[in-house]
Length: 210
Ligand SMILES: Nc1ncnc2c1ncn2[C@@H]1O[C@H](COP(=O)(O)OP(=O)(O)O)[C@@H](O)[C@H]1O
Ligand SMILES: [Mg+2]
Image 1 (spheres, helix red, strand yellow):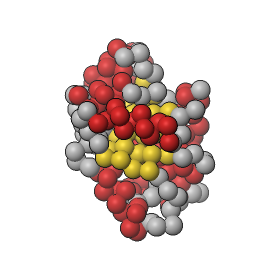
Image 2 (tube, rainbow, N blue to C red):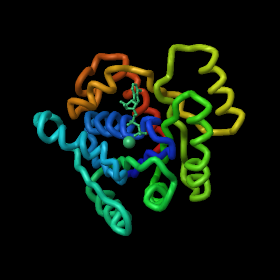
Image 3 (cartoon, rainbow, N blue to C red):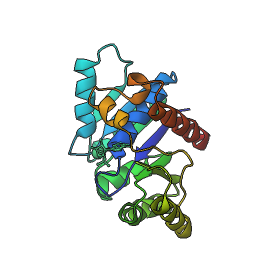
């Protein structure tokens, strides 16, 4: 069964593209056929893909598509017939293309740094997903070692009744370095703490898809 996972969050810099890359490469490494779809005009995922094609030629194949507007639905339908996992990286707003990608999704992941600003900004994306009847969950990103402000963030998320995955990504240089090489951490540093976090995230995402 194929599935579309849309990564959405109206706040820029929350980690959408990072999450898209890390999840896509982990799914590919787990033996899935994977496509990534960039619907953000900033085209960060596209830049990563170009790098992968040129500097990481031995890396496993991931299909790629940059699309927007009315062609998005058609393209997602086509990819869903051809690939097992489709990861959509969306722009930092909750308007038409982002809404379309949420509508098409089997699961919506909302990266969120453990800060009030990110938690507040998550609401509009979660609301759209809920309205469309789509399962949606926050993915805590750039999580610091435990501390008071992190506990407060967890409490704020719980008070709002937001769903959050138990798997989280730490604030780690390995995520940044891998992107700059056209790779994911499971490929560039498979034994790192970052890679273990991504593997745990993948396991939880696959459970959610079942
Ligand atoms: N877990 C992380 N650890 C370290 N740096 C991160 C992490 N997640 C994101 N970043 C960095 O934060 C910035 C914004 O991340 P990005 O994935 O581009 O966010 P978005 O796509 O939501 O705008 C980038 O410079 C990225 O390298
Ligand atoms: Mg981005």
